[in-house]
Image 1 (cartoon, rainbow, N blue to C red):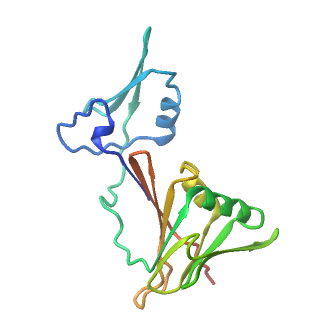
Image 2 (cartoon, rainbow, N blue to C red):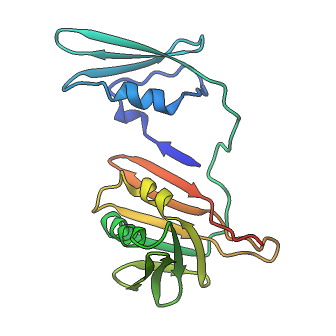
Image 3 (cartoon, rainbow, N blue to C red):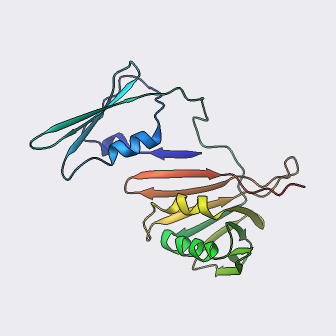
Length: 207
């Protein structure tokens, strides 16, 4: 699950008469937004009839696109309520380099937070890698030692858009007496005055 938030003041104009849910095909939207040129301005408008209109306007021309909205299943309207047991704060560039090291040996990565350090491990056909960060270089807040395995590829996609100097907050949740499974990972970072929150399910071994 991904949550993106941007304050209305970040727009030159923002008019919403009532709260509205829009389902949009992200590939189509991304391709359309990729066509904006130079200093063009962009206007996005929902017509209330199943179409999102995207208008690019420059000094000499205007280009308009019309994208159909789609039905989407209702999802959580707020962050998932998870009792996280470990919080790691690390620079985006540092975490990206960790994932590059992991990619050399395995598609999966073990993240471990304990009292003295943040540890990353991976092993596979390509070999093994272990990376340790002591407290100080990486901030670790801990209720108890917590670890879980996640997809290296998904984590790489999550932090790809993060600036190297931006602080990334990673939350890990240990299994509880009522639920022995590892909890979803939460990754949060700011992008300008906007913010991203990602939830990623852990890799669970099955018999």
